Length: 400
Ligand code: HSE
Image 1 (cartoon, rainbow, N blue to C red):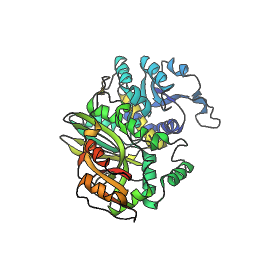
Image 2: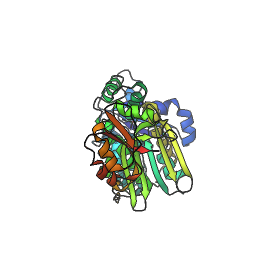
Image 3: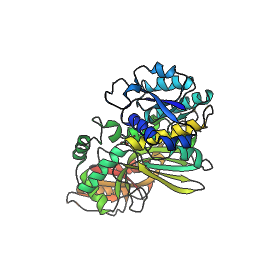
Image 4: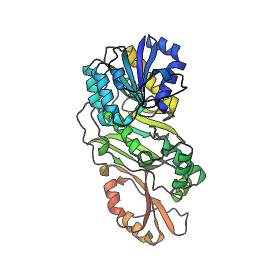
């Protein structure tokens, strides 16, 4: 019998306990041993909860119990999750987490410590919720040089953008409704400003390069400026607007960014809607792959944590290698990367746009403005040309 503990009895933590008990028998078969939750750490009491007698308030009860070999960290945030994780690993206890903020900030250090203490630090649930992507990158795709990763990695923003597209509603209206329904946080900044997607692509980029990609280095733009007019043009062009997180190997090194993109009708990420996430991976041998599923939510995310628990159970006393070194990667300047851009400007600037960009295929939907899509060019060159236009109404990058 393996004894486990869950740190944080919120949405994901209670989901982990539920998955472990609902699928107890098949999990025991697949792990080779039964897994029992001995403790649940939380500041709160849970009167009436079937597991209320397992709740403890002092992490040392868990850390000092030699029977505990696996800890699920579902608290989120850096403090105190970082210290609790480190202390558990230093005692040889494996830790499975859904905490992308902690993985992005301290992943390689915690992986090194786990290796030194013959245990594991696993983080399948930190990116894409229930979508298996960390283990596939580490194991199934081990023979590949991963050339590109492109993903819709945030469910909240994908839900908002899908609603805006379908209902013609404004960002503020949809955000308010999403908050009322509990799909968006009361403080939605981490989601709508792209920080959550940025942490997730930092983790994937680190696995792609094998070194440490710091999230602060990644150019990040959120979705707050996307308007109903932008969606009217997208519809006309048969494109969707999605918040994309991407990371790519180039001749000069890796480039990573998070920003809204207009996506062509034929693109596999075009039809990823609502709270769903998808990760599109290009390997140099296997070609293109797409992983799709629920990027958030109680049982989907908990299932990914429990997949790690099973892996840890199968590798007790043995470290499963994960190629993510502590050395920081210096990313290439994203201003060197090339793409097409959708531009909207006031009618007064039509001449200026032609002067700056040469011949343009004008798109007209509203009387007082026009739009066009540029030829492919480096971001740097685009910025220079765009300077020639005074009243730019919006710019959205294009992925065909
Ligand atoms: N806030 C995140 C999202 C939760 O909306 O995708 C899952 O990481």
